[in-house]
Image (tube, rainbow, N blue to C red; front, side, top):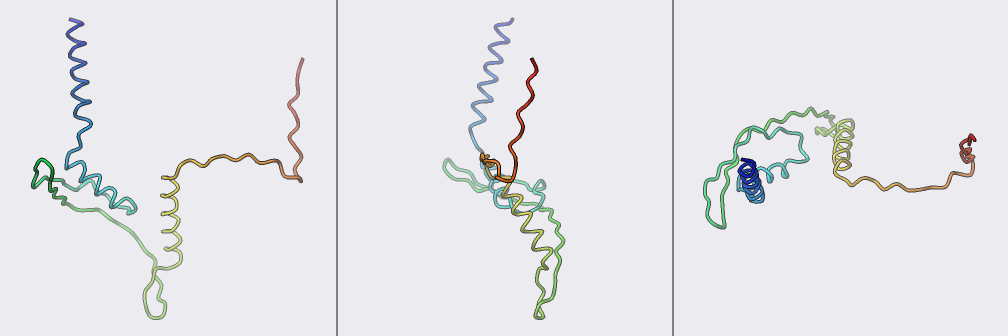
Length: 128
């Protein structure tokens, strides 16, 4: 009985591993759209991905649905034309910078000597 259970578990693992490496046109389409909209604050969950044509070496995926998007921008008039105000531009720049920082590798720490105006830390007391 235990041997049968082990064989079935191994077979199940092979099926999962074998299927995990193969990317479908639908999953590629989803990754494509996520990459295309990665810097835009929107909700892509209501999109549908449908293969309309598929061959051995080519496929066509229809991506359709509604993209939920909401943004408030502050405008000012300059020389008779509407432009994005400074507050909105600063917010947008900060949001882009924060997103870039989140994708960046962790910063490397640097060791520095204590500045001349600071006294070095006192050694810890040793009790015998």
